Length: 219
Image: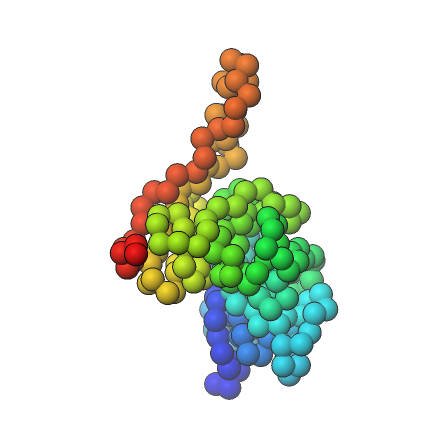
């Protein structure tokens, strides 16, 4: 009791048996033992009223994800960046800068890691999803403001279903969940090989929307 003020995103490291909870108001990520729920450590500095910009600190963080190696990814929302830590809580790197162009962030909210280690980030202001590699380099982006399938309104959360290769997003304003199917690295390689054998240099088919939850009807 008294450890959390305004908990937001949560993620579980199954291998290291850790639970990560983002506390937006404290500007911290709290790390708990997944078996006895004991608080082990805090990542970030509290009490600075969302003013810190230094690596390893946060300003209104929102969500967290863990990859298969135990690395931790946090959306540092007010600083428009993603910060990456190891399983011990040590700062590794960061990427992202404010802006409205590809690779930049308006207000990053959700983060997820797919089976190939790609980093998927939702941006509330830009109403789009951006996908990065482990070095923080932009691979693709999609979305845009709107009511139709593949567009977003008040985009917030994101999760990766690594068994069926699906990406699931949530939107707060229309009250909608959208589900997308992504092409894995192995699948992309399988598409590319026969095309190159035929001398076909065109790009492989784009990812397709798998299913869309119901929201308000388009105006």
